[in-house]
Every structure is written in C-alpha cells, then in structure tokens.
Amino acid sequence: MSTEANTPSKSKNPEDYDIFDKQALAKYTTDTGKILPRKYTGLTPMQQRKVSKLIKKARHMQLIA
Image (cartoon, rainbow, N blue to C red):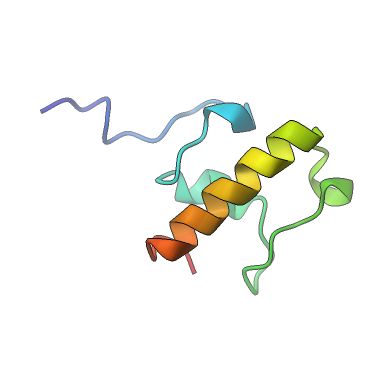
C-alpha cells in the first residue's frame, strides 16, 4: 500500500486539495458548516468553485459535518 494516498496534501494551493483534507477544507467553512464566500476566503472564482464542490462532496460522503 502506498502511504502517499493516505497522507493529506501539505499544499496551500486550494486547487491541490481533495475531499480527504479535512483541516484544509475546514478553513473555508464556518463553525456551523456553511461555506465562506470569496469575499472572506480571498480565492479566485475558479478556486472557490473547486473548494465548494470538494466541501459538498465531503459532506455527501459524511467526511465533514
């Protein structure tokens, strides 16, 4: 088994995140679980869309609340 697949990415680039990066995705949500808007995250529109989709997929898989 590869340990590379189990370790979350250390990249700060939101385009490199995946649905298993709980800590990274938590930066873009509020305490109640709502996705923060671009105004507060400072992401580009493309990055914001990708992060939003990742958060929604992680919610659907019940990885994050």
